[in-house]
Image (cartoon, rainbow, N blue to C red; front, side, top):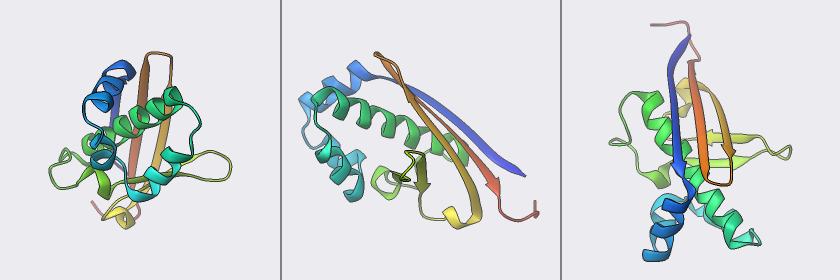
Length: 123
């Protein structure tokens, strides 16, 4: 049973401006494991796109949960990739859900969609 759906879109130029103004923004948005992946990226544009996608995904999770991110910190949410490139989503309490995540980018925007399904048939 679907418990929640969330979608968010982010202007990449807005994220780039925030990153330039506040170098600690990365530490506030990305988990330690995500920061390692961020550091391994070769270009500034790819790094900005990465942060924008993660930001959108974490906002989409708050919408899917129906609580916003008030109960979670951005760094509590970890989005990594399988070998195939498919993103995976982890957060406190995620054991209650089957999680589906998609992140996409254009030159100007990053968008993320999250679907949470109950692992149990309980309502």
